[in-house]
Length: 369
Image (tube, rainbow, N blue to C red; front, side, top):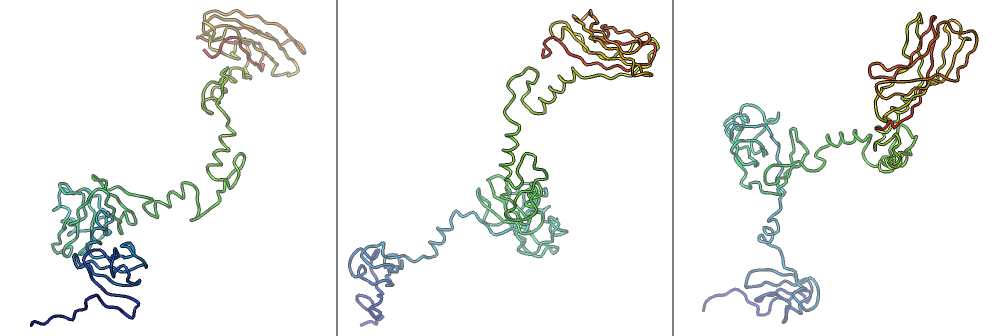
């Protein structure tokens, strides 16, 4: 009769606190396994799976299957995180041989590499955008061997050294794309851009507080500015643009059409243009009116003032002078007139002696066309 190992029919009972047993199939549905105390072990003889009783009671859910290498392989299947690469090299190489020569005769990305370093190459002609492993000693005929775990869409790799040290790249199926904040250097640029002086929570400190409240967030500060600017202007008599700068430009232009002019001229019988306005047919500017004051340069107490009214049609002008006032003796040779010259309606002053003239213009007509 042949020898056999020590056998126990129903399993081992350890001081009544736990059992070690076996059976065909998942434990706990019925029989002794369903009555086993917490901590008991059960071996499924059909597939070698080992179970531990995790809670009391009847049912397969009271047992926990222990993990094995197949479980780990299945769990890791599809995870895209890869071993870190030492460098991310974007320099273009004609082929793998050219990249290998560069590695053996100098540096990659300004960094010396050693055996087993992992290099993420982007631009080797004819080669997949994959990670290569330095095999051998650089300078002594080392080679670049493509990682057997080839790049697939969704893979992520961290770069530890070189220009892109501290950055993470994700493979989109075509190229490796930098992800996230990338590096402390980039974070520094962003902090400087928004005016943040330190890490962590920081209260904004605005240089001026005319509208915004010091310490408010950027959202609140911009909201304050927006509220002060107000709604778009909706009554386009003169202002009809929808931007602040555009509206101010239009307003400036309109105010400029009614500005005050100050002209100093030598007299001597030569007409001097005190004001000039474009002459145009139609309804752009049918009529103009000036309030004009002239004083003698040598004796400011001698003044002359009047209203000068003119009407024009783009080619001809007619004018009248009314409400004439004077102080002191008459200004020698003073003469006031209006003409059209060079496409402009002009207010002219002439005198024998030097005078100073002030004129404020108003207009009649549709100045928006």
